[in-house]
Amino acid sequence: MRLFEKNSTSRLVFHPGPAPSAPTVEEILAGLREQPRRIHPKFFYDTRGSQLFDRITALPEYYPTRTEKEILHRYRHMIAAHTGGARLLIEPGAGSSEKIGLLIDALRPSAYVAIDIAGEHLRAAGERLTQRFPDLECHALVGDHCGALQLPRNLPQAERLIFYPGSSIGNFEPRAAAAFLQQWRRLAGPGGGLLIGVDRPKDSAVLNAAYNDAEGVTAAFNKNMLTHVNRLADGDFAEDAFDHVAFYNEPRQRIEMHLQSRFDHTVRVGGETFRLRAGERIHTENSYKYSSQAFAMLAAGAGFRHRRTWSDSQGLFDVHYLEADPFAPGARTLH
Ligand code: AVI
Image (cartoon, rainbow, N blue to C red; front, side, top):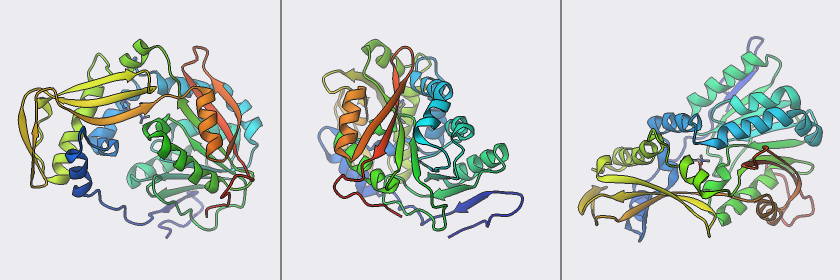
């Protein structure tokens, strides 16, 4: 369904999409019943959580965002030379328009499709983009890019380029990341590609600092999840009953974030009582780090051919360009 038709003043087409399915109380309860207990990282992102995440991306310790922007800015023309121009550019989980803005001039896409669950955020970002690039045909599609994606009809028939920056692929368990990449290989279709930002393993001091910033923004982001869960599932978590714990698990090449109970206490959520011991943890996030080789292998398993990597001079972060392998099993285009 289209809300706004294209007109002479705006090249933005807004597609409200189906109503997002409400996160279920049962899902939260199931995670809390597990040992070790866990809450899915998607529950970080209420309005305050999204604002805190935006602040994280500007912290001196949190290198991924600024490093990726530097890479995109420095290599944008080389990236365009590899991907080719006039593509249908698709950005799942688009959020803000900042990073794509760095690329549009160089890539000159035939149209741009931004996909995000947060409709108002998406519309505002689309409007900013169409003001900056008045000739750009821009589609804002409200939807959960982690679920099954249905692209709007009547998009230009051009080879597709999916853009997934921010190293969010690292927040999926490796098996889920592979399944996700497979779905995108089909979305990219024949001749299509994926440009993706991936954080690398590195000195644990750098990683530990990035997730334990001095100002305590990451701690506030982690604890805010409890307040969000209280609202969704009628809970009585107290943020100050928990400590933020984040560390690099080197053998598993991932940052782990937890909330650690400061003392023995009970919590009521969704009508159920949970007894937490002093020191007991609720696991809230993993952030996997992939070397270029490890990521190329993951992508190959999902039916992508690794074509090129651009990195920063300190070797902190990679932007990979992958092409959909037309001969990979199950390769067909998703519409
Ligand atoms: C969204 N994602 C890539 C961030 C990361 O680094 O894994 C989420 C985050 N968690 C704590 N700080 C940032």
